[in-house]
Amino acid sequence: MQFSTARKTLLTLLADGNFHSGAELAKTLNLSRTAIWNMMCELKELGLEFNAITGKGYCLIRPLEWLDETVINSQLNPTAKNLLTALEIHDELDSTNTRLMNGVASSSPSSGLVCLAEYQKAGRGRVGRFWQSPFGGNICLSLLWWFEDQTAFSGLSLAVGVAIVRALHSAGIKGVGLKWPNDILWQGRKLGGILLEVSGEAHGHYAVVIGIGLNWHLSPAKAKAIDQAWVDLNQITKGSPPSRNQLIALLLNELFQLLSDYHKRGLMAYIDEWRQWHCQAGHRASLQWGDKLMHGVIVGVSDEGLLLMDCEEVGIKQFASGDLRLRFDE
Image (cartoon, rainbow, N blue to C red; front, top):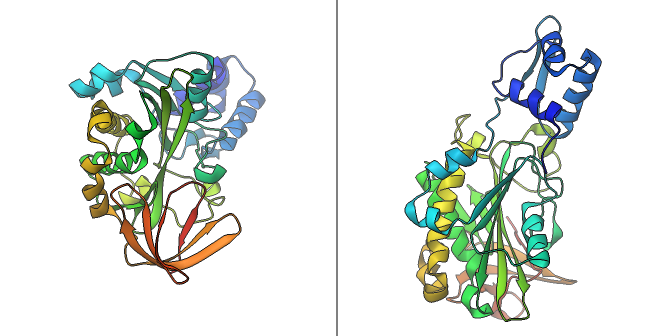
């Protein structure tokens, strides 16, 4: 879904982070100054922060980097270029995952379809949780891939975590860790997450949508709604985060390399590296599913990607992800 021409033009003018007078903007868009003010208020609802100063006009507090298909494609490696079948960039969506899953339901798109959004109205994490996605402030990326059977994508969410860490390292982001089964952490705070959704087909094939959300720059207003310790790339880099287009290209390079032969290599090709970045081992934690609650110490992860927890009640036990909620006790 794309914005109206007026809103897109206004954002394009303001993207440089400089002041633009209300009169100038009104003349360019052929609107009243009141209409410009109303549009600025709409931008605030999207999570964009701006200054409005009499005699100077409006400016975004943070310059806006638009997602750009040409820039992204120019930084893809040969494997990614070969396997990418289409790249969609939307101004606004409910969710990039939902967009691709709906496409699977209505047709049979090829593997390698990628969907990006500047803004998500209903971004989702695990167990139906809402994912904060201010306009131009996050990486909201989904990728569709087909597998022949369920065993071919076993443990994929953990392998995707390794791919994300590799991409972040290539962008100069150090200190990243992984929390089972699909969280990306930085010094114990949540930087991003992975959401895999699967659609089984009558002919036996399975469509897997890999959703990735990374905090690039969250405004204080949007951050208030987050109920856990969080961090964004702007904080990590002290105000100099990597380009979103560059980071998306790095993510796609790693993801397509992973997917190119995952049906042959599986999780075993990534599990040792996943354990290297695992930041839970040895920590006390609480694990809840439904109305049941267990306490214990995280031991590690099995070769199959199951969580190993030394539970106070029953000793060492294995857990699949499902609808579990895992929290550190510290």
